[in-house]
Length: 374
Ligand SMILES: Cc1ncc(COP(=O)(O)O)c(C=O)c1O
Image 1 (cartoon, helix red, strand yellow):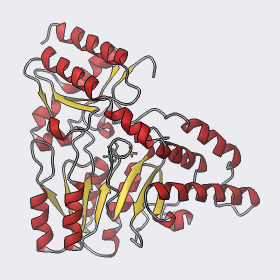
Image 2: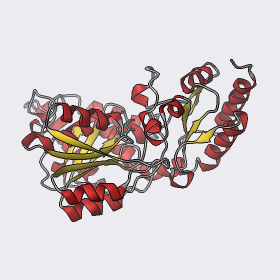
Image 3: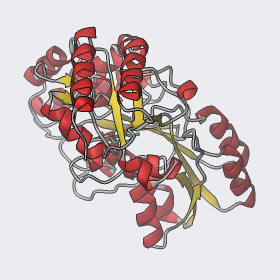
């Protein structure tokens, strides 16, 4: 990625220090299928279970409550679908959530399994806890699902408050911690929690659902008996080793994200002055230090992403999942309007973002701003 000013750390992150080495070491020792009964398979299984135990320790969970998945998306699917397998009921969520939550909610409603309550969201980018409290009081709620940090704006959501409301009402809560873990001090709360290693400098292709003791999950995929039948598919000790190595470096990773505040502010101030009338999306006081989302005045966000790409600067418009489809961000649309979503871009910095990278991005922004516009 040396050829780019990579400002898309919310989409994914490069591998952290020691992660690749841990993966190579695991693949050399645990190259067999951990479900095979022969000696090589049993060795791979032992290594995998040892990794699971260490991951569980970091997550303050029991090893049997750590379910490996192929991504944060898959983890969210399992955690959100599970409560609706055995009974119907109300699912509370909001339009701030990642599509791996909102699309599942929509599907559950279509299938007649859930009645979805879309909690209102504020222009600041926060879910309305008071509204959720009211709906919880009415009863019939089987699950509340809430992200810890928003993928588009970096706004930190009120997980502790919502957790307390859910516990008071006796309702399970799923916390999507994909954008939070390794980026802030995350309260390890939630009946279930979702992680994705690639967001905190671990490998792509591995995530987890971490459950509180005894919480029952159900499979989304059908096939083999791996992960007690909850997630069929050959397990990968190499990916799990990378997951653990990244987890062990989480404090350094978090510090690296937090250290981006000055660079983020410099970048944001430059965009605001290069394109007068532009506005920041998400309450600046509630954001993590590495994210800036700006509605750029007079420009189409997707076109600006392409123009910056040509200049060697990688940013995004809309959610990573809809990148390439030019779909305006549903998050910004929910906070403001579709028109504002269409003009918005997200810049997300990370531990590897140097002053030189930011300087290069500033120059590219100035060049684009200086061009005649339609
Ligand atoms: C908040 C949030 N949840 C879930 C996901 C999905 O994770 P993955 O890309 O590993 O499927 C993402 C990805 O961007 C995310 O930002």
